[in-house]
Length: 204
Length: 79
Image (cartoon, rainbow over the protein chains, first blue to last red):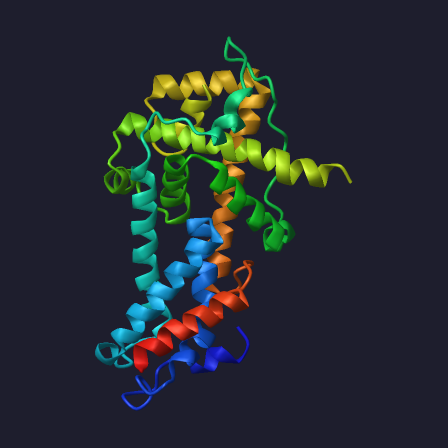
């Protein structure tokens, strides 16, 4: 944001390569980090991915030679790394594995499948609430509480906006499994936001 | 039923199932709320992505320690 906008483009063969390494972190670090943060949901991995991206970009800077905006070129590198990360996380866990995080869904329905905890009414997404940093922090934490496979499916589908088929290919899941995972992810996220975001704001 | 509701947001269900879902939503307020919540999430993420494209991401910036660490890693690369 601030003044970096004007330096977005590499001006030509003179500039690229000669910009000191520290400059790269200053110019692109924040944007890349913000981009990674919601997608990989934990801050530590987001930092690692930013570092890998900047290193990869810095090494390849000679070939790049200012053909386009460095920022979007780096973002493209980061995006590939994020999809790989989500893929790896999403595959690492068995489909049936139940972790303590499943507690979000534990008492949602009774034995006959009736709602025990009724979902709250959220209304339409208000313009202002979306700009609140806290909402995204809560959503990120909620994503992190889901089993990794569910979170990866949700991220690829809703944040990366992949098609059903692309998600299935990336995580190697069957169609019916995809519906189950997306369904559980959405139930878990809804419940989590009900508890940790809407529950809190409703009280005032 | 919530599974069918969720699935209906990702693909077009056969009309028999669509009909069943519609009918059920008339009777089950909680199910309809769940549907609205999922749509809320989807709409929120869309807006987030739009804000991000315009350089207005609402997320925090790179923490100073990480910045320092990455700077050092990059400098090692150049020396």
